[in-house]
Length: 184
Image (cartoon, rainbow, N blue to C red; front, top):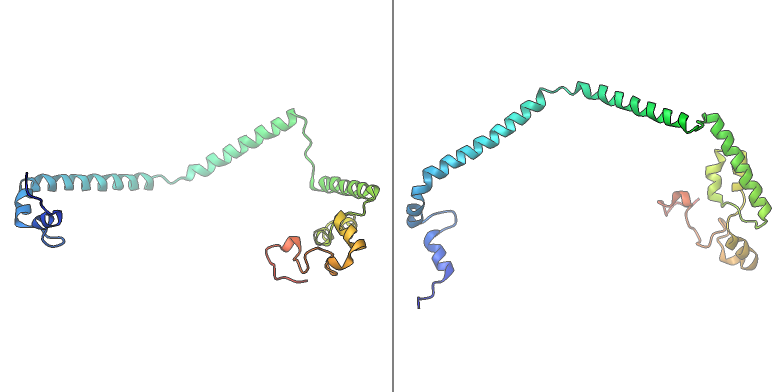
């Protein structure tokens, strides 16, 4: 058989140093030099042509009609939605009417909680949210929430945090869950 030829040694015959070619490699590539150069120039010209065409095609459009089209489409969707609501007999409430409905719902919740007699209502973090709202919600929020708090308050009062009446001492409000270090 033939003699073993080390691949590293064979590679060094074609490329003795990094980035250079041996005289044998130059002779082997010489017949293809002109063809490869022309192919490279054509490929480069194609890329530059596509890029130039794309930029010019986008530049000539001012996109002014997009706002008009979007406005017309929104108006058409709104008309379809209103027509569907009329057909389905849907009632649209004003802000004042919606507030009145929410007040009545809050009264119903208070009545249901009071009738249940469990003593379980909302915790003090809810009073922060309800204080800006209606007096009904503030009344509900002033009470404690949870059956466990009521049971532990009577049976083992030392278990609960004396300030907030929670199981975890010094726990932040639920509304401020991202700021663990806040102590009120």
